[in-house]
Length: 533
Ligand code: NAP
Image 1 (tube, rainbow, N blue to C red):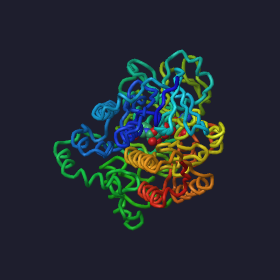
Image 2 (cartoon, rainbow, N blue to C red; image 1 turned 120 degrees about the horizontal axis):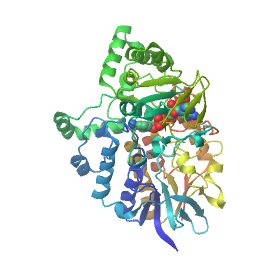
Image 3 (tube, rainbow, N blue to C red; image 1 turned 180 degrees about the vertical axis):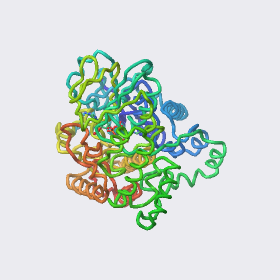
Image 4 (cartoon, rainbow, N blue to C red; image 1 turned 120 degrees about the vertical axis):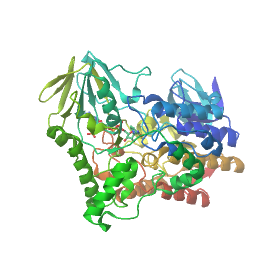
């Protein structure tokens, strides 16, 4: 027996929870969230690795739809740590009584569109079936772990973990020889914490990375009181900046100032720390010569912090423009390499050959290990969607439609898949924006759309091939107006997963422009969509 609903939402992270609230409490729909995990939190439910913390400042890493919620919740530190984010998500879920419509420990294994009935049929690993008019994916962009296929891993006698599938009761590193592969945002957060606990840590670096100090600290009573008085202004700034963060990007350009002034500005930005470093000048992400100045500043900082010249050389040997890959921020990452128990192995100079029963073998040596940590990232953006085995009209599979890379309209809809909405899908600003900001916009847009359909007695919405072509071209154009595609090994391009098509996936035109485009689409009677009774 299938359960009949108006809408099935897949995933109970930031997007799925708010989508449930909107459909159930604002539109009065029968909606249910199916969630693979045992609790709310989405990506944060799984990412419990050492040092897991959000890079968005905490006062901007929350919903803004409820003034009451904003007034009630107080973050404790400048950047929220994973357990505190989980407490927040649970607080929201309880406050709005969401859990009664979230089915946990429920893995979706298939979702097929029945054109005759104009319904989606959703199946779970336990064999349950759900039938609904609308299907909304809220599966996150970075939720499918990428464990590289390294020969010999199955022979390893020690323990190994991927950061995105971290054991809930933690990992005891004490007295252990640990090897960590990966130096992205995750690896950079994990290194200093593992280094403090382990007997020895070897960091296997393939691509050196920039990082700026986070300068995390408890939020003071003074800040909390300022925030209380300025909350509306903070929200307004978040909604008016291209990346959804609560700071404005400077209007000055890198070459508007003298060398000495520029150095001073970078020093101040470094001293303030965090993602705001990118905002010190407006042209760092669009002008390579301007970017070189920021890159050079950070490389010099790395060489100043890291005392061992050989480690400093390896860690500062960065081959891409600053922030062309998602720029990490850290808490004593480079400093960790000054510890006697931390080494770095440069895989570009001694490629990783295999995992052996007792460690990792590179082209030059074998390093004995008790634990291997894979901080190797995710099959980003498309991975979580394709894992759902979504089939649209005539049984056409999404994985076939996207064989050469994701194609959709506004990041929200795919032709041939009526009434399916993908929150923060490829082609939307998503990962280039402070996530709660773009999630709220998407969810509210989808809610308004479904509300309009019900009011007008419409039962089907679907975009067209032509509209997808135009949107994909616009997404490409927006990416190529920046330096982002120049990091050829970035997950933005799918380059971190062997065999994945190289297509720049997120929309780089900025959240403000995207919001305007979505509003124009509505103003022009859902231009680009075909609506039917
Ligand atoms: P990532 O940025 O994709 O980094 C993965 C790392 O693993 C890279 O250094 C990569 O090297 C390396 N790697 C992958 N496969 C490898 C292989 N076969 N051999 C050797 N090295 C390999 O992944 P991530 O650090 O998990 O971050 C993903 C995204 O999650 C971030 O960019 C960010 O958007 C988000 N995130 C956010 C936060 C936060 O807000 N605090 C924290 C963590 C993550 P290459 O560069 O050479 O491919």
